[in-house]
Length: 263
Image 1 (cartoon, rainbow, N blue to C red):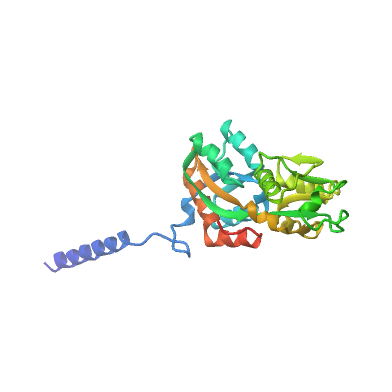
Image 2: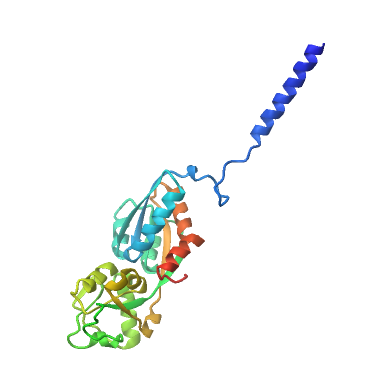
């Protein structure tokens, strides 16, 4: 009889222990979100050229927080990236330097859900440190003999330049029109141009390689940056997680430090 009582007690204790194990909470990260180990694989991000510095940093931060993930980045002019995605390029995420190019993908039913605005940017004049053409205003860019470079109109920085020209009543005669803002900056840093129209973030990122000249007309062309998951993405969970990191407080801090404004 005593033996049966002891055996029953052991059985009850074992059942209680098993029940306790079944109610253990899942592991969480310090932020309280699900364990980072749940995310894995590669996410391919197509981003506007003006985002190169910030997205490179954001990608490193994302990979550090999520071991087992890899962020592949491709930078170019927003219009070029739209063309690539439309033609079937394997992108998971698209970040544009304007809402117009994002709308092209939305109209083509190539987005998964809606885009989220995450930053803004404005134009600034970039000149070599010595400012050889003595540029001090937007109107100075139209002076005879000034070698100015700008983005082509189909690129967001080019569309912004068109808007500024109309607002200022000034018509530029550029020596070249580039397909991305980084190409414009390259012409200035190499000494091929006296001035170039780029974003304030590009001037800040270039450090002492260029001198930035702000002008009031830039307020007439504020570019809003949206980001979205591409409908053909093979890893939409990871794509959503990366977008979440860009729009998080940590992501906003990286963007703000680079000179981007709030959306």
